[in-house]
Length: 187
Image 1 (spheres, rainbow, N blue to C red):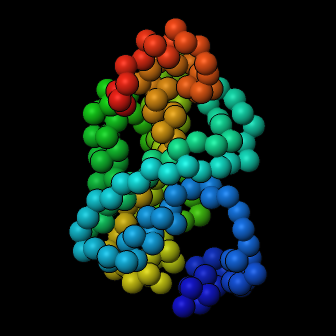
Image 2: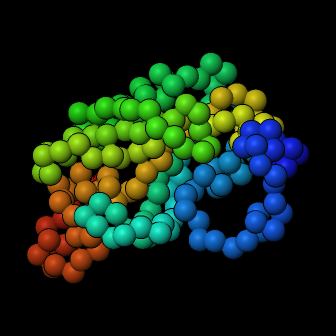
């Protein structure tokens, strides 16, 4: 079933050898999809956090290993507008007021959006989460009938905003003065 849907949606032949190859996970979406496939909810909201790995050049906003937060929501009439509203509400609860969205491409969602939030300390807009509606090629083989709104991004990026950091690497530093100044469990 997956091979047929793959050919139809991605216009390439599905390769069992490629599917069985080992790789460090680059996102937590497989965990989310497995859960949705097991419970097949009519309506629901789900959230996960997991460690992921990327082939990135380490910079003030990128790490090669980080924790991804991911959320999905499903309902019969779920829409992109609902997803944008959910994101604005999520950000507002973290004290982030300035949010904007723009269209982008992600292979598993269509339509897809990127969100940017204004970082006061950096005095610039920074990308925070990617989001979209899972494509039918993703959900149909799993028996999921309703649209699934999906979003995800780095927990460390959220922490940058919460602790007003300029550089994500500071989270894993050993400056004792800073570590002692940060209240625990404040995210």
